[in-house]
Every structure is written in structure tokens, then in C-alpha cells.
Length: 97
Figure 1 (cartoon, rainbow, N blue to C red):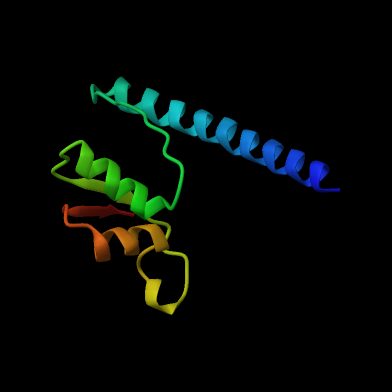
Figure 2 (spheres, helix red, strand yellow; figure 1 turned 90 degrees about the horizontal axis):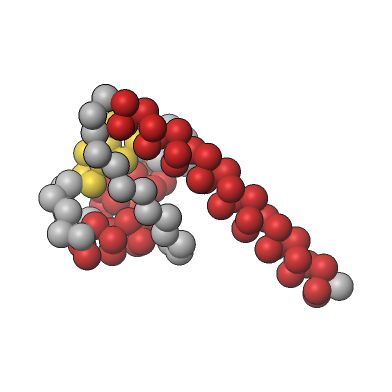
């Protein structure tokens, strides 16, 4: 039973990676078509923490994040990742809707 569950998690992880690569590739293509240089990086872990860690390591001057505006009452205007970035990042955060 545990082996089958582990295999299901591996399949789910692989599917998530494949879907992510499709979306990252599409976004990169759109950006490059208008002359924006893009470096795509996939991070694994707690999303806001990993974004902040990566941005700090890269000496980024700005974090840009989109939001769907879903979540609880506290996140009425911001998504949970955007909310966490705005709250915890020492690097300025630009939220785009």
C-alpha cells in the first residue's frame, strides 16, 4: 500500500512539473517576443519563502508577482503568495492583477 501511494505522489509531482514547464515556457516566449530577457527558474518548497530566498541570493531589486485575489477575508485583494511576499519580503514587491 505505501509503495502505491509513493508512486502516486511521484506521478503527481511529475505532472505538476510538466504543467509548470508548459506555463513557464509560454510566459518566457511571450516576454521574449516583446524584447524582455527571461531566465526561468523552478523552485521547490514554501513558495513565498523560496521566492524571497532566491531574490535575496540574486540581489534582486524588485519582486513582481501576480494575484488572482482569491483566499480568505484577510486576502480579499491579494492572493496568499502575494500577501506573504508583501508582508515578509525586505525587497520591494510589485503586485500585478
